[in-house]
Image (tube, rainbow, N blue to C red):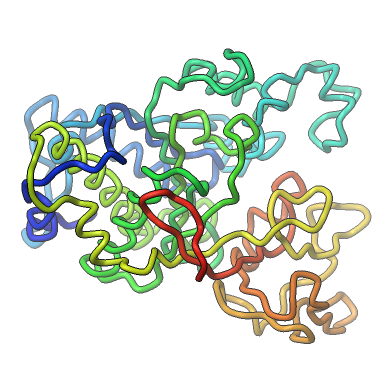
Length: 401
């Protein structure tokens, strides 16, 4: 589990004037796991949180080794009302990424509003004319959106209020992404929370492989990922780890990022409640990131079916989920590293090396390299493409790197 740090927390508890950025306290936080049913780390974390709730309500402490202290989120962050969500229970029980289709592509208003008739008309492998009902993940996405007050489908224009202030979705990857904190550009609250978590995970927890991924600005009702049913959405992605496996170190990294986020939100709430008159959380972030927060951005899509920039590998004619070319060994485990035009990219079944053709620029950065989830056509096959950038944590907007 994750160790508590009193020093870092105390250093943020100066009296200060709360920034206008946080004029309203964060009350409700939902932590979801199992959006992909074989990503067991997130499921472990939400089950651990429910155990913490049980212990907290019973006024009991968890058993722990002498040199560790398990954080109980209900005790440590009392200003937050924390709930959990097992997002895809059927896929979790089957130890599969999904039953019919990738649920983390099902939360746009277009998909939430579709019916069996419109589904069969779409060019989607999970929808065909023989089906008498929607794919399971489509149905489950509708249920989840309804649970959060139907913020997309239940309002004019699909941009209503959600029941949860923040939804934090926990994911893992088979790629060497380290701790990656993901939010959508323009969300000032989440951008400051990400900066805080980045700083704490590096300087206090001692993790070097920590990054922020800034998603392109998108209207909420067009966002396809599960946490977009909250007023604010955030994703924690940690790897590498195999699918269907629970690794202690990956759980620790996930909890380090999660606790850092919750701590930031709780401290911000305390500043508002106490109407403090000294240095604030944001003051510390201004000191830590005077020139903006380093981040990566998804490269713009160039293909018609791409959500973001992705170098697609060819697939076999008889199975769209099986690559016809594998990732070249020189790229394996080299996430956030450069790829240049002419560099080896894939290796075909005949052993021929396929070089990068420069389609995204002469030099690009790669992410989610050989991610197991991206072998599925409904998830979008291929390797992610990123560009290095910076953002202003008080606006959440990209600034010149």
